[in-house]
View 1 (spheres, rainbow, N blue to C red):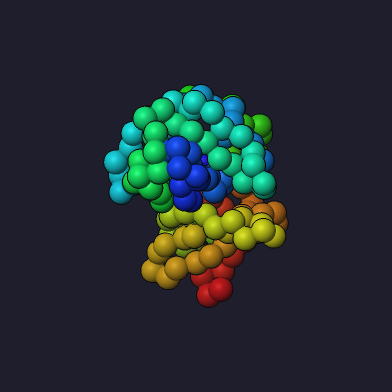
View 2: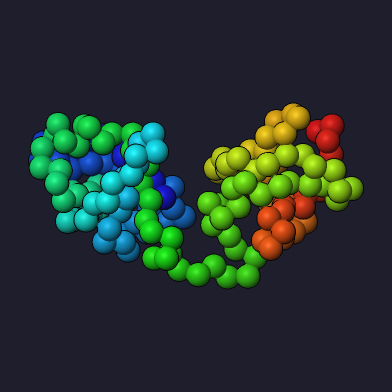
Length: 159
């Protein structure tokens, strides 16, 4: 849901790069998980706020700039069961990672490895015999079949 960008001031505060739709969405969660290289650690949020078009936070156990510096670059996540349910045809990116991506002809492009946020629309990063960057938008995405773990797209193998 975000990343620790840099330490903020000298008392353990951190500046956050939020990956959420709304900058202040992370403020809804009292506990964050921070991870680097697969090592995750839970933190209680003591205080957090929007400050000059960014988000800053003070987490329990981070009491000085050195402690904040040590977690710089960490990814920020929240427990899956704390997230609100999605509406029909809405998805959390993390739920789609690993899905097979096939085109309307039934040809497999590869596995969905991640997403890029480009500003105009989100882009799927698909790894297969060839790497593809496929816009995650209608009409390119025909449908998402959650039960089959598949995304069906209007995209040719030669694109």
